[in-house]
Image (tube, rainbow, N blue to C red; front, side):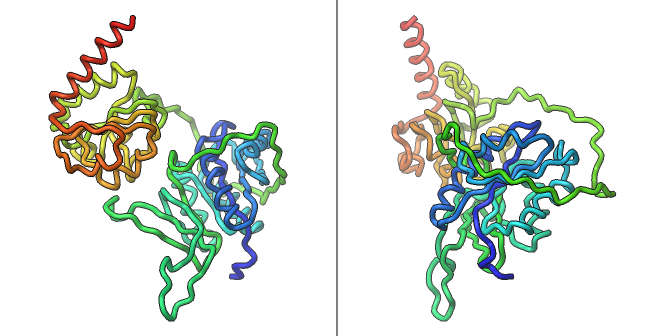
Length: 348
């Protein structure tokens, strides 16, 4: 493999029902940073049926070029045609870096494509940067520059690993939603659009979609919440989350939790914040009964205001909190809720 042939930072621009998923815009923002360090361009790869009209949106969020693979076989996501389409783009255009969102679609598509193009894949990344490999120079070993360094939780989230793919291209990663920042869209921006179709011949690997049932859930997506009231093991019991729910209701916020709470079966995984949960950026984040392990902090440290309530004055959560209260949450949270109710009532 001639590594010099591979140029550019590519992003799989996921779309569902001809609407581009938010993760695509987030990845384009990060791709702009990586491309700047490598002095190269950002290319979005758009697969679907009748999707060419979406190219301008990708340009507004940072794509210099958009490769459109448009075919009726790509109308709805199916593993085989999408894997064939993206792998064909990689084989033809030879990107140096290929980023895919760690969504349900991306987690299915990314590994299959990486196997087909004979490269590695780092899954569920939370940090991407350009740097040297090995990270520290090793006597007798060449230190390679301008490598994609991919950081992700490992061993069940108990440690953080930084991974490189120095001898194969493209360097591929799936990236968790909410981790990267979208850029401010540049209205009216245009990208170079190139259409490419490798040809799609249905075979016994092409599943037939009989029906599509849209999932309906009453659970609010914590990634969209402006105020989060998050509880940890220190809350004590699933019943005790009622006091957090009361506070969230007064504030117009949403309840979330730490991994320990999910592992105990107190709350569903959809509400988990942290390395192995969701990354959130609310305006206000209450960390109640949460010790502040690095895995949890990584998922909420970008919150605008962090308020911690914990009986342990030495809890690591206070190192990242803007405001901290040391004491019994069972006494503090109800008093805070009552005070807020009184303040709101007086304001009316």
